[in-house]
Image (cartoon, rainbow, N blue to C red; front, side, top):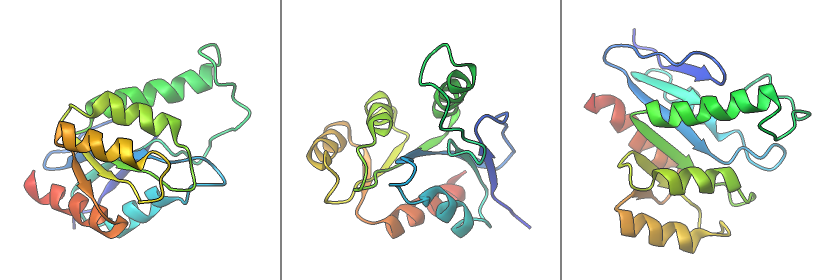
Length: 158
């Protein structure tokens, strides 16, 4: 039986033959963003996908956002490594958030050919997202359900 694999930060990133790797980029702002990563992993639990999930169960909000904070740096380095490693990057913007890190990830990977983006109409920078997606020919979907459908298709192409 096929079973999706979820690797949360900061765990070792590994591959499995016949599986596609998908980084779950996007809004995480605790207390504002819904836990959309869990919904994707649960919904696609029977697909040949390795989900690289930066949302971690042991996150500690007391970590200082500084290169000198060992745990914080470990998190950021894991995310950067996972973004490079992934076959695809799913980017979900939550309209209730500002998502500055997601915007950085979007800009850094817009030309990669790996992005699939869902950005709701009310996201504060939707216009920038739309123009950039069009300019770089980034796959953009119009609903969260369509995002899940596109991810499912990825597991069938590998």
